[in-house]
Amino acid sequence: DIQMTQSPSSLSASVGDRVIITCRASQSISSYLNWYQQKPEKAPKLLIYAASSLQSGVPSRFSGSGSGTDFTLTISSLQPEDFATYYCQQSYSTPRTFGQGTKVEIK
Amino acid sequence: QVQLVQSGAEVKNPGASVKVSCKASGYTFTTYDINWVRQATGQGLEWMGWMNPNSGNTGYAQKFQGRVTMTRNTSISTAYMELSSLRSDDTAVYYCARSLTGTTAGNWGQGTLVTVSS
Image (cartoon, rainbow over all chains, first blue to last red; front, top):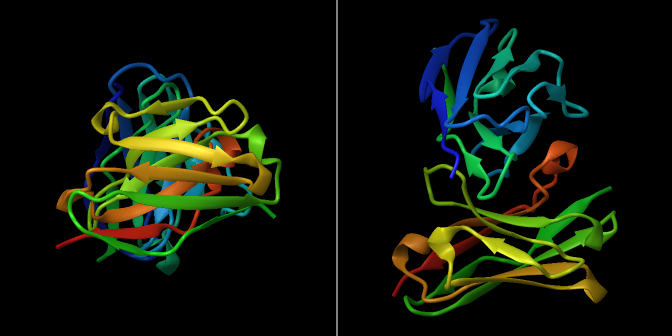
């Protein structure tokens, strides 16, 4: 199974900050990497697919990069509605696997 | 628009089974895999398996092999996930999702809370 490791597990940031979350795969997954945002009591929301493609309707302050084993999600200017938990997920092979999540909290 | 609507919350005794449904609309049901993902309270996302609604082929995470069964009824565009021999640590919100690849990874059901308690 491919293990996905996110860092950090949590972070505190202020509105307007640039936030970077990283995700590392235990083996190469090419660009088969999704990023999700999840708020309490809600289903995950797709932000980025194929490592760097912005899902329709998602604000452009979200961006993704990387390929192979190392990936990043960047929020260029954190907004109040961005405080949530973020997950990466590989779609290269089954079993599909998720990172453990990164909780973004208000500083 | 694409929608996945799941059945309502369930409370089950340990050892029982639960069957959660996921009704698809807004697209051709047989065109995309349906995946099931669960999330215990305060925990991360855990993939359980997938089903091809066209062929009925399935693939399950090893952890759930022998306890989970994924089926479908194409006439009503509905997928099902049945989990047996329930334990207290199966208490979680269960989600269906249309594929987990590409832009279609954006379609998830609203979640179904399954509580296992005596």
